[in-house]
Image 1 (cartoon, rainbow, N blue to C red):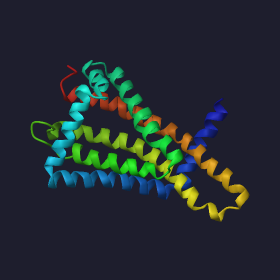
Image 2 (cartoon, rainbow, N blue to C red; image 1 turned 90 degrees about the horizontal axis):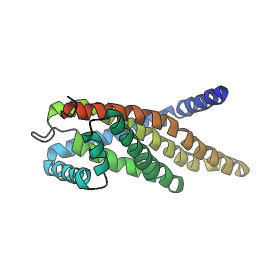
Image 3 (cartoon, rainbow, N blue to C red; image 1 turned 60 degrees about the horizontal axis):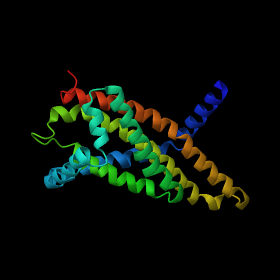
Image 4 (cartoon, one colour; image 1 turned 180 degrees about the vertical axis):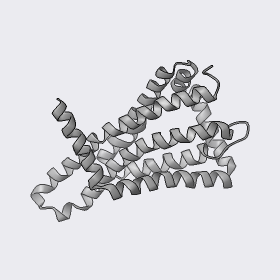
Length: 215
């Protein structure tokens, strides 16, 4: 078992090493869009107000109300668990990984939407709503959670790269080569899960602490 775990770890390291440039470009793409979203919020503050209103409604009575309840419980581990499950299974597997197995281009599209919305909503302070004192510690949450999504998107972009390179591979090897890329996508869910777990624990603490839930 230990030998298998080390072998898997080495395979994951090899994936990042082999496509280091693509990984860095994926980071630049995602977090660059967050910055673009922040600029949009500065120019059109009404866009930020609108998206914050939608998010607040979702947390109070919509599909995200369970997360809100977990945070108001004051239990950091419970809130972190709910956050991790939501981000890993809904935010990653259901919204990025599975659709991209069918349509690989879906991952950067979802990344575009999510990063831009984050930038519009969660970077520029709003007096009385999102003061700078609450946003500053949340920037680390955005960085950690965003990096988890970056790895998931990177995995799917490798599928696109593999498809574009199929012509350079002998015909009889093309199917196995692409299946290998799909297998790598699944392997990369391991670092995604680790990053999102760390992000969930930190987010649960920082949200509760800076909103006064933790005494």
